[in-house]
Structures are given as C-alpha cells and as structure tokens.
Length: 379
Image (cartoon, rainbow, N blue to C red; front, side, top):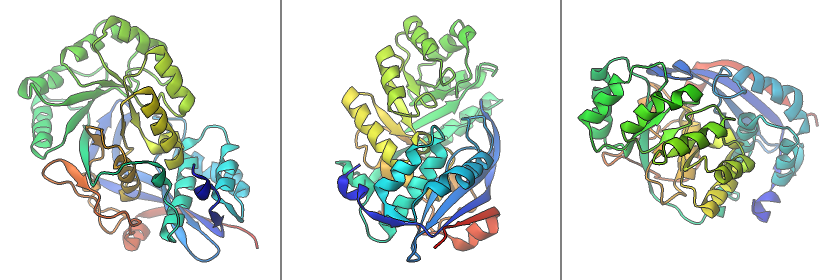
C-alpha cells in the first residue's frame, strides 16, 4: 500500500450492515449447490462529516464455498471488528485493526472496500493507482451451470459464443453425466471452453472423470480438488502433464500462492477480491503473480453491481488477461441495486465508461433489504 494512501485520514461514525435478497432470472447449479437468488450483505461506512462508502460482502449465505457466510460475518463485525475500528485515524490504522483477525477474508474485504470507496467518493486517493496500466474495455467470460441435457448445454454455449463472450466456463461435478459436455465440444470444436469443479473431485476421479474432462481439451480445469488438497493437484499434473490447473478456493493469501507455485500445482489463478481480503490484498497478489509469471484473471461471486463494478475496475488493470468472469449483472438479476448496471458490447467486452464511484438505486436497495443492523460509534 502506498504511503500516501496509508496516511489518508478516515473517521467512522456509523456502520450499516444491510442484507438484501436480489432475485435471479433463473437458478444456477454448480458442485456447491443451487442458487435461486443472491442473498447479499452490504456494508455502508459513514464518516463524521456525513460521507459514505459501500462494500459488498461476496461470500455465500451458507458455508458451502468457504467457511464464511452472511450471518457469521454479521456476528464477526458486531462482536469483534467494529470495536477495533478507530473513530478517528488513518487507512493504515484500519488495515492494522483488521489484520488482528485471523481468516475471515470476505468480512474484512467488505469493510476495507467500503472505507476505500468512501475515500474515492470524497475525492481522495484511489487504491488502484498503485497498478501501472489500465484498459478501457474489459474482455468478459461467462460461467454457466451444470446442465442435465445435451441440447440445453449446446444451446446455452452457442448463445454465449454468439453474444461475444471471450471464454465459456462450465461447472462440472464427478457425479454428472458427461454427455452434455461432449456435445458442447462436438458442436463448438474450437471454442474457448473451461471447466470448474469447485473442489468436488477426489483421488478416485484421477482415474476416469478428470481424464475424460481433459479429453475434451479445456483451456483449464479450475479447482479440481478441495482447497487444501494441493497434493492431488500435483498428482494430476504428473498423470496429465498437459492439463492446466487454475486455482480458486486454494488461494486466500500470498503464502497459499507461493506454496502452490513451489509445488507446481498451479498454472493460473482465478483471483476473487473478496476471497483474499479485498482490493488492497488483491493488488499484492497481482504483483506476486506478475513476479512469478502466473497468469491471473478476476473472478466473481455473483455480485450485484456494487461488487461487480469494483471487480471490473481491478480487471481493467490486467491488460494481458484473455477474459475475466465478469458477465454483466443484467444477465443474473431483473433488478440491481445500482442505478446503471454494467452492460457488455457485442464484441464481448465491458466498457469502463467512467471510474467515478458507482451510483446506487436507493429505492431498489430499500425494497430488497431483508435485514439492517446499525452500529454507532460513541462521541
């Protein structure tokens, strides 16, 4: 973190924890489960002058992707984090206060990102200024769920390619029928396809399921095994040297990345800012990936426009990435909580029209809210 940002003054008068249920157009099935709506937690940080910033906590409402979930994060903030945050201090003071808590990257990310958003809204330094490049058009990939029928899978992939998406990632699970995947590859032999197992594979899948996936020539297989099973990733690379492994859940901090790299268990990284502790932590990981020569792109957790715009801004600093998992939020939600949801061009890119802070649709946020907790600082 740049010294000028670390020294930037910040105050805290009130913190709002706003939980909202945002309906989806359709359900989405992966190895983690079925999602029918986005139950999302927002943190709104108010300073003593009445300025505010907002961050989206991108964890799930259940502990199926990571150990964190909404209710637990609310308890963490209410019982442990809020009391540590200074009434008056600096960005560096807040980062230090958050670092005392071990783990809980999603909760820490939402707090830190709300603070950084406040600083940008009042005209202060942008945390992303530390990154050297910026593009105005971000190439978008799409993540599709598990399909039961080959015809539906082919139709959905064909539609995604026709819309211009630069990469199509399909969720997979060892118990699924592989016919839909085979049909997709036959229908689109040269298409940029990837598979994401969300850690659902075990050692037994080294013998049949994973070789079958590799035969379909994906760009990579994302998170084939559980987050701590890098040993199996190494074994997969030994058995199938041509298979590229993209890690997701396995990397929550710099040390995880270094271990995976030293073991030869990673070929590229899906970097989800919320999973690693927010923008500042993501910037550090991007620098480490650059040093190691590990390709990296920005992923997401079904964020609304609040988190999706923040991810887009980070993706715009990665000029060499072929695609990011940044489908426009209009693909998922009939109604978003931002005034101008992101849109994608026919060329498969999302334009970064302006870097001004995202404007909220306050009416939508209020109507979709199911729980609101307000924490006040004394004095």
